[in-house]
Amino acid sequence: MAQIVERVARKMRSVRDRILIRMAHRTVERAKTDPRIAAYADTDECNASIGVALAVGHLPDAVTAVLTIVQNDLFDVGADLATPIIPDPKWPPLRITEDYIERVEAWCDEFNADLAKLNSFILPGGTPGAALLHVSRTVARRAERSGWALVEHDAEHVNRLAVKYLNRLSDLLFILCRVANPGGDVLWKPGGERTDDRIGDPADGRGAAGGE
Image (cartoon, rainbow, N blue to C red):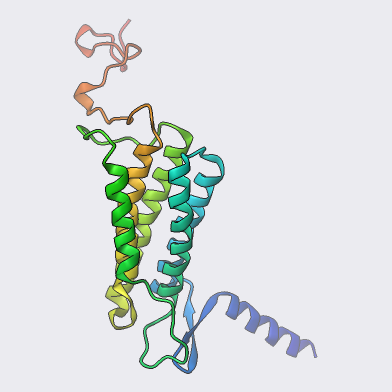
């Protein structure tokens, strides 16, 4: 009896270490490091980070409305990436279409129209909402990279529009970061333009490395 219990326990550990994916009329096991798993897991992380921004970021109502739709879209993206394309599926799977992408591009145009022209790169920061959306933006970029890695790994069974959506979403999130900073962007100052009275001027011997 003890041997049976041990075999069952080993099998359960094995299943926990891998993930089951439904393909056609069979179920296959995939390691948790599989590119498909990485793609939809990173998409899920992006969605979770947006949820944090919505919960504590005190975002403008218009931004909140858009991001609420985006969160639902990301569930669709994750479902798409998690479901390999196969011929004649028993049930039509949920797939990302051009309509999703066009909607995001329209939001980009709408929100960007009222923003000042950029004359420098932007530092992640400003208001709490903007800072949190910068995190979401970087996670969206990672999810996109994971999506393209999946395309390279298994192009025949991946809907590229799902990955394209993630690309456009990162653009939208960048724009919404700026919207969430009504006081203006936090601009990057290249090294030669930065000054700090606490450091002193290296020319007068009172720089950070020493001096009296």
